[in-house]
Image 1 (cartoon, rainbow, N blue to C red):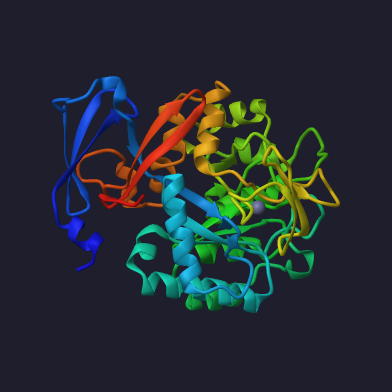
Image 2 (image 1 turned 135 degrees about the horizontal axis):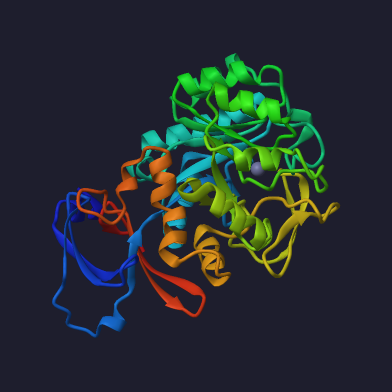
Amino acid sequence: MGERDRSMSRDHWIEGRHYRTGEPVAVRIAGGVVAEIIKPELERPEADLPWLAPGLTDLQINGYRGRDFNTLPFDEEMVRDITRELWAEGVTSYFPTVITNAPEAIREAVATIARACSRYAEVAGCIAGIHVEGPFISPEDGPRGAHDRSFVRPPDWDLFRRWQEAAEGRIKIITVSPEWAEAPDFIEKCADSGVTVSIGHTKATSEQIRDAVRAGARLSTHLGNGAHPVLPRHPNYIWDQLAEDALSACLIADGFHLPPAFIRTALRVKGDKAMLVSDAVSLSGMPPGTYETNIGGKVVKSPEGKLHLAEQPAILAGSAQMLLWGIERLVAGGLCSLPGAWDMASIRPASFMNLPQAGGLAEGAPADLVLFRREGDRLVLEQTYKRGDAML
Ligand SMILES: [Zn+2]
């Protein structure tokens, strides 16, 4: 048995302040699961305790610290390295995201991620599924965002099935635009096969969005982004998705993608169907500068951490900030309480995707936990536990 396997089999305790109540708690970990939560007898002042919260679940991560799932070729070790590095961001479950590309490239990317899951238990434990974003999206400038137009195409079930086969069934989310005539049929087949269909990068009409929901679409990908810079005041596809109760919504709360008024409105309208994603690209964790990427070519990372196309500064090229930052922004902006924002980035996406991590900080749930401190507006991560094992 390795180091980690040994600690898995040992009972141990984690102490912290419960992220919801602020009360000190001691959590007994047994077999990777939260076995018991009690009030501890503290040997240190309560205020010295770090906060204890469920590990973060990110439905959309393209890459991290100079590596990504869209620059081919990559290997199983790279998938493992990203998975490990994400622990430093409190992420214990995530969906690596493969975006619009040539069919063969998408196949290769999802196959490599699947092989990494088969080869490394720690990867399989953290990758809850693959998110394929595109290529069945809008070809139009604006809604297409930074996706490569030459690879955009209408929904194609046979093609998707071949990717799913290469992925050993691990594709769990697909982002698609309902503007294509093929969309309702494709969405229905995906939903029937257990794949969550998300609406995104779209210029769909009200009717097309309604039909997509009827066919089984359940989510909006980064709602409010991947859109035209200018839209008719109404109707438009943002109102349509906001108003559609059957759609949960993912939001990028990095401070650049959405203004506070939009986030506030989306939170009020969507309630517990609102979730945070990072949409982090490989430049997350990298210094400011101009970078050559395969996601839209030349991309600029500003000193404030904003990512945009070099030639079209109005078009964002994904996010360089992680979920912790999004939680901080929601709390600092007065848009959400800390427990509320934390849930939007942890148990809510886990619950949406039917992961056991939906149990959160509770007896019987996987011991995917993080300890952090609050320093002003910042949340400073202290430790990440995956199935009870300290990963940092
Ligand atoms: Zn996108």
